[in-house]
Length: 436
Length: 151
Image (cartoon, rainbow over all chains, first blue to last red; front, side, top):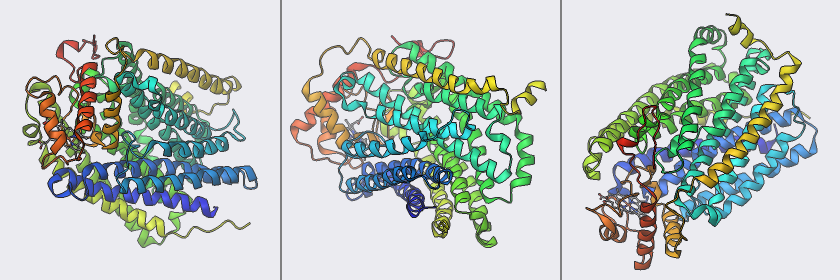
């Protein structure tokens, strides 16, 4: 692997560490604002936490795609150049964004709070990886390459869409401005899921030797179902906005197609057990198993939240946070660690370290379960009060909610600990250079 | 049983293979078309008049000071403070009440040391948001199919 690519993947891991660490600090600042407001206020911490998490996922996924693409085209100068342009601009801009955060310069919107002009170099960098992925793309390629391509192209589209607010036409109506913002955000999640799913299919093929997985009808079916949902299932963020009723209808109907995925998971459960017995000695497979558990749990939650009549109780509450963090930590992070573990050959670590990692995966699952359930209970209480006693003042409303936020913060510390240990072990792995 | 086996088979039929890029392009076209519709029709009738300058200024302050990390508009944002969508028209609160919070902060909300004009601009922005709709969906708007019928 090229030095730059290795640095980029390690940079992504470092972002994960930063996201976890600042996440723990933010949760304390959320509970005790009086002690933090003067030196490290929540509105400074939260952007650092969310941006680090977001960039971890995008850099992690794109860094791994760059690695596999460079493996496919070892002697292609253009591929190398495009990889370099992408990696160098992204590392530079992300560092610039954090410097701005530290100096208190904001100006963007949720998740992208840095001064908006920094989006331009990010866009240019992403164009480079888009050209890279389209280079040599064949229509009869296995499903995982379709997923990488789709993820990269749709990230480009949704990232651009996320910046449309800078044109005044979009800001002339607040409802339009918010609808487009959350349309872009919702679809962007679908875009990085495509990249990560493609990578995990690829790695699963490599470790199981089952090439058929890359061209099976089921894989293609799930790919298209995912794409369909990426495109049209973002409306649950904005159900309560007074925009056209058909928008809600389309989002609601499309989101219900995801029950099919839930049924496929349940029906494939026994086969999964057999598979896991065969593959559990691969460290990467253990991450994938954890991801599949969290996929099931979060998909079920998402399906319920996509029904407007239930969304009335969950929207604007911590259930949304449970879903956002449950998916980014439980699914995206676990899958990316599986893929990076494969690339870094974590399976060749000493038995002792492998045991530590396996323990941390299990410990993280338990901590994340407490974390996730606390947020759901906090959200249920808040949602119930908001709907049934809309006139209650804010501080009385939060009183019964706060004990569960405390439980969430406590569990969050253990999530940081268990994932933090894995990140440190991965960062210390010496990845050998290619021998040519 | 047959279906289950068929699904796990590889796509060996050349006809099916051709369908993959075609389906992708079809969905992509649909996406472009749908996005255009959303851009145009997401603006409800209520906001057809020109936006005053101070509203834009207030919107920029809202972003620069990261108010959204603690407050929600239409339920979107952080959860440390209350949702501010319809506070301006709230009979027990309203602009004067909000002004005190924004100007001085509290022990939970930081003081942003905004000038008098800036505070007024933020309030103008929040009043404009308030006019765009209600953040809480009324029980009457919930349709039996589970969706909402608003307006």
